[in-house]
Image 1 (cartoon, rainbow, N blue to C red):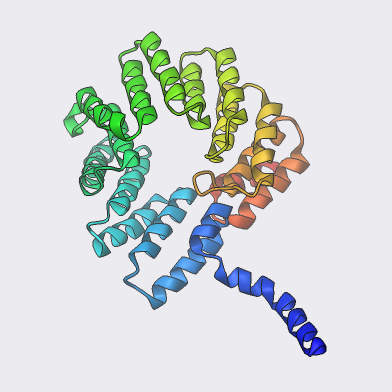
Image 2 (spheres, rainbow, N blue to C red):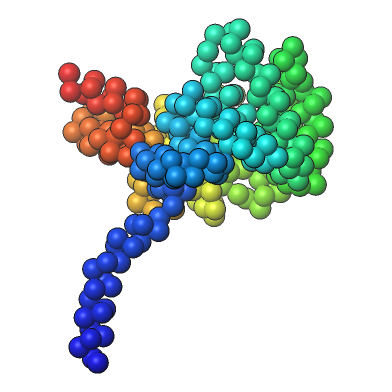
Length: 321
C-alpha cells in the first residue's frame, strides 16, 4: 500500500502543473498581463459557447489593454447585445468608445461622445449603487462639451450621490470640478479630503500627485507619490501609474524604475496595469538611462505577453536600427 501511495503522489506531482494551468481562467491571464494567452483562451471558449456574454466582455477588456479599439468595441457590443441589462458591460462599452474618441478626428469624436454618454448613463441606470459607474459618468460630464451632453452641474449631481456611496470618490469629483474652474485652492482641499475619507489610500495620494503635476508643483508631486507608494497597496496598479507620472514629469527616473520592478516582482499584478505595459515602461526608462541592452530585454518581455503591442515593437525596432 505504501508503494502504491508513493507512486500516486509522484504521478500527482508530475501532473499538477498541467492541472493548475488548465484551471487558470482568462481573467487570471489578464491579471498576469498575458493578454495573448487570454485572447486565445477566450476565442476558444466563444467558439464552443457563442452566447457567453462574459467571455465577450473579457475579450473586449483584453483588446482594451492592447489599445485595439475597434476589435474591443465589437466584442463589447456583443456582450451588451447578449445581456442588455448588465450595467458592467455597458460601462466597458462606454469606456472603449471613449478611448477611441480620444484618437479620432473631431466629427468622429463627437459621434462617439454621444455613445459614451449613453453607455455610461445606462450603466448608472442599471447599477445605481455602483460608485465606479457614477465616477466614470461624472468624469464624462466634466470632460465633454455641452453639445454632446457634458456639464459641470451634471458632474456635481453625481458627486452628491457618490457622497453616500463612496465619499472619497465624491471628493475626487469635486476636486476635478474645482480644477475645471481653475480654483486650485479648492481642488487641493478636495483631493486632501479624499485622502482623509479613504483613510490614506494609495489611489487618493496618486490623485493628489496628478493634481500637483498639472499645476507644476513637481516637488509636491514627488512627495505625494512617495505617500502613494508607501500606503497600503490594495490597488497595485498605483505603482505603475506613479511610475508613469514620474516619466511624464521627467522626474526621478531611478525611483520610477524601482516602482516598476517592485510591481513586476510582486504576485499582485492586475488587469488595470498590464504587466506587458509595465515591462514597456521599464524599457523606456532604461533606454533613457543609456542601457540599451536591458531596455531591449524589457521590450521583448512585453512582446512575449502581447505580440501585437506596437509601442514595444516600435521601441525594439528603434534600438535594433
